[in-house]
Amino acid sequence: MLDKTIISLDLGATKCAAGIIQYHDDSEDYICQKSCQIMLADTTSLIDLIRQIQEQLDLAFSEADAICIGAAGQYNGRELVHLTGAYPYPMRFADLAKIERWPHYAVIHDYDTVVCATFTSYMNDNNNLLRLNACLPATHKRRVALGLGTGLGLKDGVLLPSGEFWLGKNEIGHIGIIQAPAAEPERLAKHLAFMKFLLAHQAKTQQPITFENILTGRGMVHLHEFLYPSSATPTPGMIGDRISSGQVPELLDLFAWYLGVFIGSVQLTFMPEGGIWMTGGVVIKNLAVFQEASFEAGIQSSPAYQHERHSHPLGVMTNPQHALIGAGYYAMKRLLQPVNPSSSLR
Image (cartoon, rainbow, N blue to C red; front, top):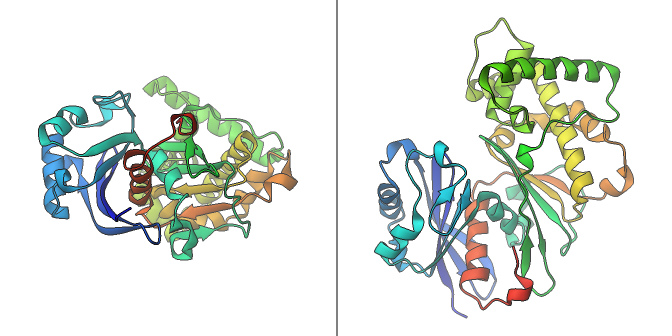
């Protein structure tokens, strides 16, 4: 098999990253040769977005061997749905692909690409990872990709011994906020007070109360409003700056605890021997959260199966190219190689 050139996209509601991924057959490595990032606010349509990407990559989509687009929302075979209100224009890829004569292409969930990146040599380079424990991932066991950014994303997957892989269809960002089963009294009291705050907020906005109300950019804003009610409401970026300068220790402590509670719940849900691998702007820009004692306390507030869970890898994927590389992997395995239908169900 010859080397292949794949165009990968990581499409969110506000920006789109794109890259040229070169697959090297002899080493089975995926290398991002060139990348770019475009804000959707600087484009007028999907056609304009793709045009700008082609100009910045200096490669037409029709000249690639395959195209893989990891996108927020769900693709129905023609366009992205269930997140249409968040995009500034319709994402009708099928029509554009036909007009522009694209090669083999796929539009998949954005966190499918992150899971796929964990199947590649990306995970062998410590420059790409912040490892939170010394546990080694079990190659052919379940692993979880967890993303904290504008939204809260999670997908699980398994690399099979045959070389095929399986991907889950979770939407865990939409689950309600749990009460940690073994929270200390002081933590429990603060948790209940915060839930009361979110209920009052819900009455005004009609937004559901989920973990996205805490473990995202807007979640950090909610925490700031709760802890510092007399202060002006900041943006997530401003909160990140205040965390870096040590101005909001109570917020960092509480955010770390809720993240730990969530991690503990994910561990119990999936028992991921292949690891939980976090990413997203909120964690990458606020790595100090993992130095907080409250993070581990949050994990331990769900005390069941602690011995088993301590053997599961936990880390942060810090190199932003992982989504592009994972999309390249998906394209190589699902678009450019024969697939056994019985072993490749998503």
